[in-house]
Image (tube, rainbow, N blue to C red; front, side):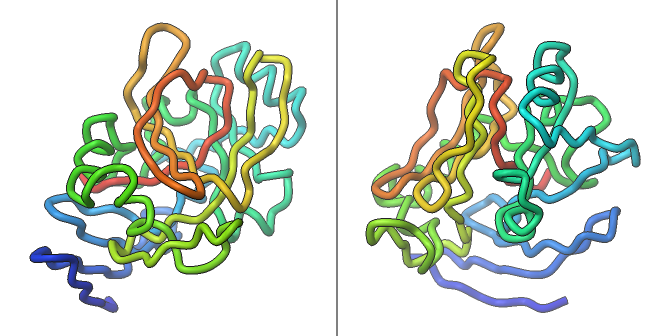
Amino acid sequence: MKKVIFILGAAVITAMMITSCGGSSYEEVKIGDQVWMTENLNVEEFRNGDPIPHANTFAKWRKAGQEGQPAWCYYENNPANGEKYGKLYNWYAVNDLRGLAPKGWHIPSDKEWRLLNSFLGGSKVAAKKMKITRGWDKSGNGNNESGFSALPSGLLSAQYEYDYEFGGLGSLAIWWSNTERGKDNVWYQHIDTDECGVAQDINKFFGLTVRCIKD
């Protein structure tokens, strides 16, 4: 198990390699009192081994959302994007009782995202500390001081349930929380070129990346 030590102010941040029960390897990093994966989730099975449906057309994605069924896809349906950025999942995959996150991990709550932001100094300061040092548009790269290694992975937008498009690759990182806001919306964490923060009003039809936090 490879271990790397980062220093952030008075906090020690430790990164190490872990392997999920499905055989996929992920690095983890300790930031304050939290332990995060350092890359986006890229699984196509639930924790119990059941497959997560691959919705590789907008029609399939729409159908899954309308029926409240889990789904995943690659950005622009390109497997190369999955290798680099992880998969995009709808809310129904995130919230499925079979468990999207590997054993010992979970999808972070709104509160857990806010604690991360606060520990790193607030939304405008945290963004630079969370982003990788290359690959962001418009001189938006970070210093990755936290070790979080945020990539500008984009999203699948489904603003009106029928209007689907990919967007934000290179300029936006956006992850699900596990916290609903009313019947149709969910809180999420985002980082764009300039800042980051927890926000609301993303509907359950969207396709977002997932970053796991340790139980």
